[in-house]
Image 1 (cartoon, rainbow, N blue to C red):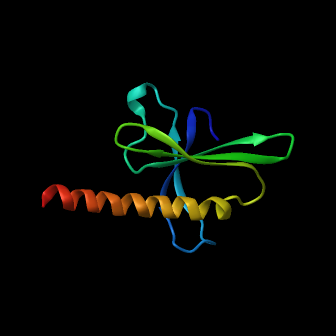
Image 2: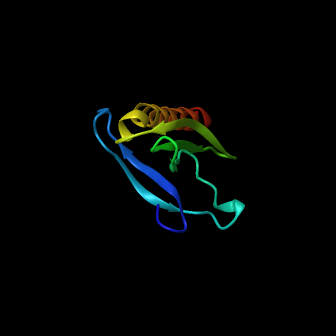
Image 3: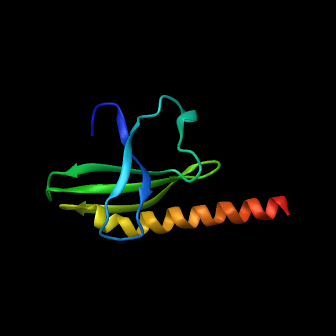
Length: 107
């Protein structure tokens, strides 16, 4: 990752597991107020020199906090295929819950 970058924000994910994840770099936060917004999914990765792979972590922004969604240790090669199902399902579920919450609060 470039200097000053925290990870990559997933912008779009296809329902096809073989498709790539579309993401943009996300700068490291300057303060606690720079946390992820609700429904934002951040992927971070660090090399694991002993295995030659990457430790990949997914964090999800909720209304009041960020939570670790998943961690995949020692992934090698194109790890987007491994994280794709979790990322896709989480973003779809969050969108559905947002619609349901809005419908319930306006009813």
